[in-house]
Every structure is written in structure tokens, then in C-alpha cells.
Length: 294
Image 1 (tube, one colour):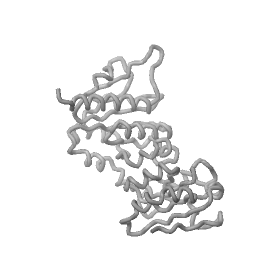
Image 2: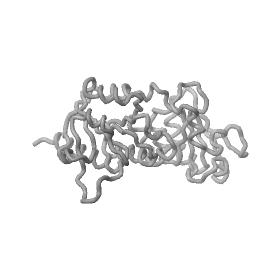
Image 3: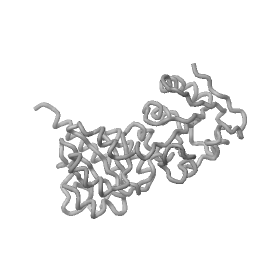
Image 4: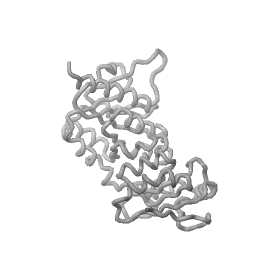
């Protein structure tokens, strides 16, 4: 059985990382930094999100700060996740009003968890691609220059909903481990495989040649094919671009095909996360149809 640690003072040094939480402070200077550097954390909030964090087993939790009610709700999930851990992280419990005073905001629902960020090697695209190398049918999302945190979170939620096999972001995208991104993703950033590509052009060159992906763009250009003609099988990587500028011209030039969502006259585009959902739905529907006998 696990015994929580009661927090009775706002200035208790054991909960220093929760005090007046800011993503920039948690990330440190480099965001994804080597192990051993200070302030290389991210913060998860709300019961559902923390439950998914615990279930993922991909991220290492440093500590948790919970209200008594949330501790009771999450206790079995915590004990299950840490049943084989060599060192069990502390779980601090404080009344929710004290939690709000410590954290400096109220939208956490009485549940906060501080976890270690992955190292650069853990989010290297080669790692994700190696895990997918044996799948004959595979759908990968490539996200280029999307800086809005809500959109990044929604893309992950849609990726989980429609069974995407992974998400790779370029290094201009918003951090998927910002609190807002995590919250909007409903915690699916913890269970959808993802990576960050520092060499975007190199990745685009390697996907067809080394990893046998068909590189396709989601873009509304004149020569785009209708989304209904999206390949039903095989290994497909779909590129999504930032809302204002879309997929970059040099990226489009590398793509084997471009596909567009039919829209009403006068509406040139839709939100990038919504476009991701439409493309993933169409792709998953096509894959189901291709797999159905007859």
C-alpha cells in the first residue's frame, strides 16, 4: 500500500516545482535536454490526463500533487503503474485551495504530476520509424511549422481517435509537452508515438528511400487530387502545414502526391487539426475497406 505525503504549508520545499507553474521554467533553456540538466520537466494536469500518463509507461514521473479526492480516485492507477518501479516517486496530498495557491491557477481539477522530459534520443524520428518498420500498412502524420499549442494538442487527439501510427513534428512546431497541448490532447500525447525532426529535409528524403513511405501532402492547390483518392493501403506519410502558409513549397516538391478536402466556394482552408481529422478518417476508412473480404 502507498502512503501519501501530506502538505500543510504553501512554502514546503518538497512541492517547489508546482509553485506558480510556468512551462518555460519547467522546460529549462533547451526544452529537450540531456538527462542530468536541471528544470527539464513537464506538467500534466487533471485526473484523465494523469491516468493516461500513468498508463503510457513511456514517461518517468517525478512526483504528484493531488487533492485528497483525486488521490482516492487515482490510487489504484498509481499503484498499478509503479508496482514494478525501483524507486517510487512521492505523492503529495494537499487540500485543493492550497493546491490552487501553490500552483497559481485553478484549472487543474486537484490533480498535478511533474514528469521528466524525454531526451533528444528518445524523440529521434529513427526510433519511431524503426518501431513501424515491419508494418505493411501504416499511417504517419508529419506536422510542419504548426506553432499553435491548441492545434498540436488537437492533432494528437485526432491521431489517437483515427488510429495514426505516429506523429513527427519539425522543430518549428509548438512543444507537444506544453500544459495546453497536453490538456487539449486529452493526454493522448502520452500514448501516440511521436518524434521531433531537427533535420526536416533529411527526414523527407529518407521516408521514401529508407523507410518505404509514400510521401503525400494535405494542401489545397489546383493540381491536388480529391481526398477520396487517398491510397487505401501501404505505408503513407501525410504532411500537414501551418494554417497561414500551408505546406512549404520545397516540401510539396518532395511529395509523390497532393490531396485536398472539397470545400464550399470562398472557403480556401480549414483548421489544421480539423484537416488532420478528415484526412485520418478518410485514410482509416479506406484501410478498413481494403482489408474487408469481398
